[in-house]
Image (cartoon, rainbow, N blue to C red; front, side, top):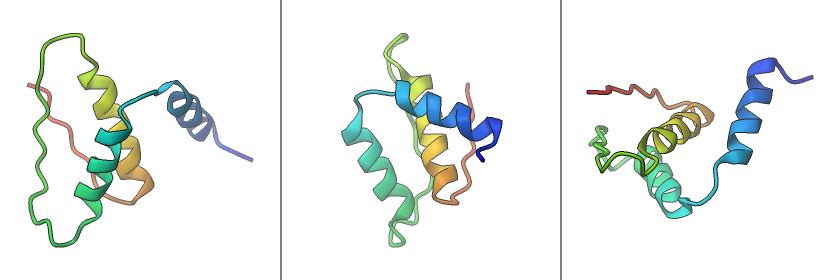
Length: 73
């Protein structure tokens, strides 16, 4: 039986569409051991979905056991 948090994650994942290229690049970024840079800067104009993308990056990190820290400034 799934926990409430797992159900929410599944629901959020189902609403996330597009950005397959960005997700694949991010997976490669966090899983490639030769990459010693672990800071990713995301910037852009308001309303283009940066926060939604970062939420998805967080979920991908959690699924792969990689720590994720978001600094919103």
